Length: 294
Ligand SMILES: [Fe+2]
Ligand SMILES: [Fe+2]
Image (cartoon, rainbow, N blue to C red; front, side, top):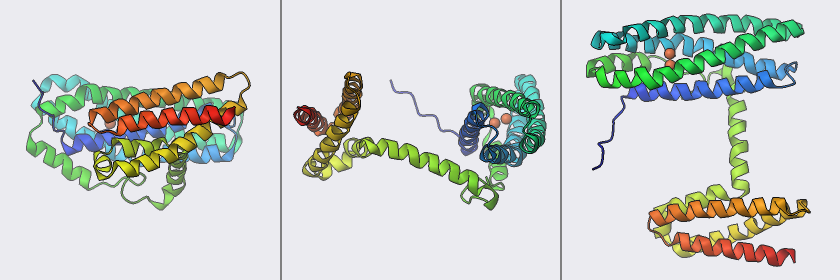
């Protein structure tokens, strides 16, 4: 028996998206804190932008929207009163934390003494842990409870509040003050994408997994796969040339085989002939590679 799909209210989807964004910022903040070059100016600018964003958007919009949702939840389900009271206290505390961190950052950026850097590291680490736990509890406990208990008119009121706010960094328009931070993430995303396309994996995924593409013409896919086979063999050769003991070669082939298995299985699931084509392509690629290195 198939379970009916749960439809999440828009507000829950939006709040969870904001948690993902905050998670990304916390990870970046953590990376900067752990970096050996904490004394570099760029690191401070990046951290200042992140903490300023946390203070200007999550503290003033995300948490108050949740407060509104929690207030309605307690009315519908009084058993949640203690949890809600705790989370509301945490919202106040998190806002105080970001204000303190901005001061500590300013101080550490100006003085760069070991004492100032240590105070910054301690405050930021506490904040990162606190906010991560806070978000986990909301997602595990209170968001599901709100989905179960709130009525349509409750969600309308929350939606209205959400519509009146605009995220200055992850919203439809990036505010000028957050351009540098936005570009930092855009560059990182581009780097990841480049690494993937380097091996042709991304295009391969798109080709194999797209049922439309399969229907549109196996011949065309075949041609493109052959192109990938060449670049795949080329990559394998580069890896092998770098290593004289063969370990890199083995790991390169293992990775490729695992990937082929994954792609092949998925492609079989969509009932296409692409899996067989891909296996043949991989085999050809490996043969081509061995021939090329003899
Ligand atoms: Fe919250
Ligand atoms: Fe939250």
